Amino acid sequence: MDHDAVIQTPVGRLGIRCDGGELLSAIDYLSDTTQLSAPRHALPTEVARQLRCYFQDPAFQFDLPLAEQGTPFQRRVWSALLHIPRGETRSYGEVARLLASGARAVGGACARNPIIIVVPCHRVVPAGGGLGGYGGSTRGADVGIKAWLLRHEARQG
Image (cartoon, rainbow, N blue to C red; front, side, top):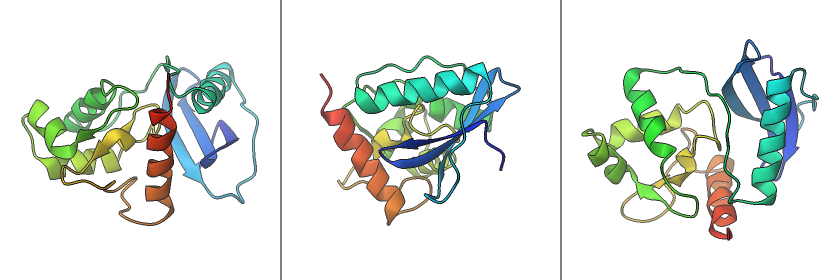
């Protein structure tokens, strides 16, 4: 997968991909052995800058042009995620009720979110407590990243 930039962050290396330099299409978690790569264009430079701002200040508000992708349902879920305030979470069921859908379908859309962190799927958790999954994983490093992001955002303001 070719990235327009690979940056180091507190949660590991992130690959930034943009459609034609105009729209942010993905942010990917990458292996620590992936070579860092400076942004090649204006948009990945701005994405990297905004991610650094977020990691310094969890109250930072992203303002990036996002590529429209995914199914219509996935886009509805991802749009709903953008309205969950920092420092707060919503259950899969709460998001599902908002969209007149099911919790598992919301979980599936969260697992397929290509623009992690900016589209905050990490803010969706099970109703019964715990963290639930992250990036399609229910244990391991990915869930640890979700926990880190939630702790980071809880420190805001």
